Length: 435
Image (cartoon, rainbow, N blue to C red; front, top):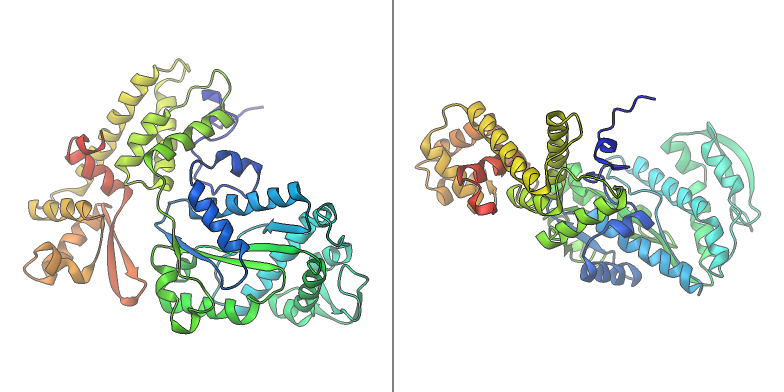
């Protein structure tokens, strides 16, 4: 059978540079590097009842991976202790939705999927054994049958009765299903502790902070008080803290910041992936030390670094189709040569960018790579705002900078250096800052 996957050519069973979030599983546990203190903090915040824990940090820092693994380790400890405590990582994270009914219905679906996946674990740790056969059938039916929980809850001799509702969010909520799930969770955890840990991820995708605040209001009023469920909020840097206004401050904790992996942690992370997926004779297109260099060039953005590592892997396989690859040291030299070529292509595509614009670009990178448009005149020395706007336009047309809507004010923009931009910045310094 023909295979078009490149990784077997290097001796790997899977992609060692995958950008996918680490799962809440034994695999994710094995592949997470470092983060020991942050894991412990996350576990304490999740495991202590009270206001809802929140986390934020830069895009590509690995926030969700960290939280997934933290909760999985709580689950594994529950199974080891068997002391009527059961923390369950939700079957999947939930994304924000502007429609409150869709959001609530999706939350209950994920809760049920989690209970079905772990139904035998309740008995193993000494909690009430669950019978979820009727619930599972009911959830997947084209129509929901209205449920009368009565004296018995679903999974505990409940009986269906009444009319039928279409399998939509409206029908789902009217069917009595949410009330039944709440009752089920209450009974399941009546003689123990723990809960389903449900992560609301990527809060920033709803757009402006006002929309994020609306999402938090939905969470507070409609699903936050589900018994046996522990919510965790996660978003890009500033999203959660700015959305957490006064009336929400007693419900949602001040965000914990998750910073990018250190360079040593990145080296360890890539080493773990190479060990996990590689055979004894595997050749890693990027060695861990080469990945460190790439990570530094791309401003410590793990997601971008993984993406570029994959592109380099495709390139080097095309250069050596006979699978006789250069030594580790030579491949590291080839990486820098390849990055130089990519940067030169970007510079050529940029056309005639004025020296003053390059000065602004270098200064922007030196100050972290992000600035609001309102600061162009005062912070970067342009004589008037239009000069700064024109400079950003030149850089944006070259894909070195991207304009994004300011989450605080939809009428304003923030200018961020792209991955191509960071590459060009280090190229202009002859990569000396990255060595």
